[in-house]
Each structure stands twice: as structure tokens, then as C-alpha cells.
Length: 54
Image 1 (spheres, rainbow, N blue to C red):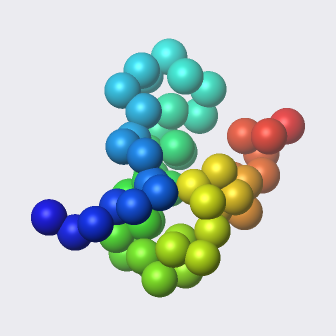
Image 2: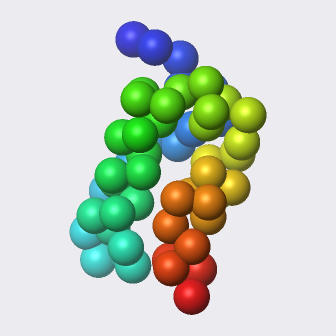
């Protein structure tokens, strides 16, 4: 399987805020891996989904 280095697995708890969007962003990792490699997962998440940060 491809290396996922600093990228955690998608959340397993559907009760987490923004669960569906979080998983969608995690899926983008395989699509936009090079861009994500330059960021921590949290930074990438904040850039993709600022609404999750309020």
C-alpha cells in the first residue's frame, strides 16, 4: 500500500463533528498526495474545511 507517513487513518467515530467532510478530505490525500505531503494533516484539513474550525 502507499505510504501515508504523517497522515492518520480517517476517523472511525461518525459522531465526530464534520465526520463526513473529514473523511472526504482524508480521501483527497490519495488524490492530491503531493500537496498534502507538504502539510500536516491538520493544516490540510484547516485549508480544505475552515468551517470545521468555526
